[in-house]
Image (cartoon, rainbow, N blue to C red; front, top):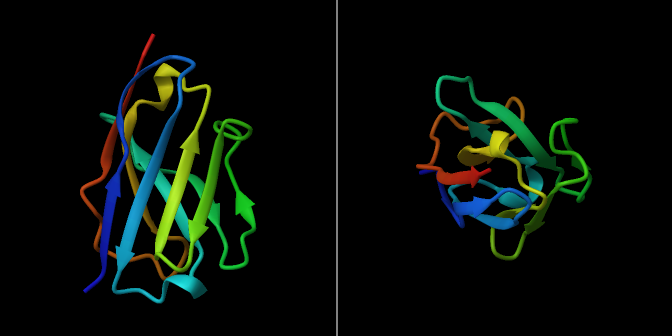
Length: 116
């Protein structure tokens, strides 16, 4: 059974930092491109970072230079370091496989709230 367990969210002031973790099971982690997504109230879920099996990373312009995704294949875990947080980063953050192999099973997510 595919599972994603996100953690590390919280309340932080604008300009602050958080590090999110996502423990995975039920997937062949080391061969998949993994990604972080977020969903703000009333908005669609959007992609915020991806890391390939070989460690190549990609980000949308909205978070480039502020967010860093990484992975630990030995622990089947993906991380998201978020710096210089802005109120518009407030959302529930999720991880999942990126692309066509994305799982229909999403985790509970972790809430990130950035106060101004």
